[in-house]
Image (cartoon, rainbow, N blue to C red):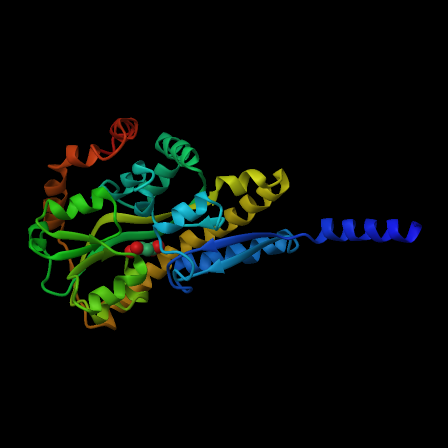
Length: 325
Ligand code: SIN
């Protein structure tokens, strides 16, 4: 009897001390992109500080879920973490589109200030209501336009061209008002639809353009910096609520280190990839002059109300009160 009790106690203690909590982290980009590398770092940090009790399984390059379906999968706790680009949330949480308004932010400092603003508390609340929790924000960079058919110097040059978008109403509106035809495709198909000639143009960061080898199918790159591509690092609310206080603390600790690293890496990689695209690819790279940039900004500002109408009145009011728009 004594032996049986000891055995049961041993099994219980063993199970308790060595039980693992699995975090499935899904993403769509390449493993050597800033996001791909950051997810690896997060795994290393978290597994180290939790002595392996919190285990991260990474599913890169859309192997488990495409970028939009992952949002629903997180809500259902099929995967626990992801870091989709802001536009991918917009179907479910429309205020994420605030990042898609053309020329709303001038530089990365504006973006980082925005992460600490009241607008983010609105986004946090809406995201929790949907069933996810925002843990942090990661950078990629500002987006630029590539095309196969012609060089884009002014917005009207996009007229009649088919453009791939990440799928928010604001991104689609941005291209419709210039007379282009926006089509939404997942990131995983981007390279192929351009290679097949199904789509003429797309907007993305230097890093995504370079790592996806879009220079093989696109001829022209316009350095427009017209919109921002960043990521919300989110966790399934259902999963988060099942964790102990200590586990939550460890996740936040690992994430804090990762975010600092990711943001620095994103800037560095975009800088070197711009150099590579300019010097080691056949892309014709065109940088908008100051006057041309002012023309683009004025052009899109004329449609301010159209963009604001896609946001909740609370978010629209907030960004106007902040003096951003
Ligand atoms: C990403 O950077 O996660 C994807 C961006 C895109 O869909 O173009």
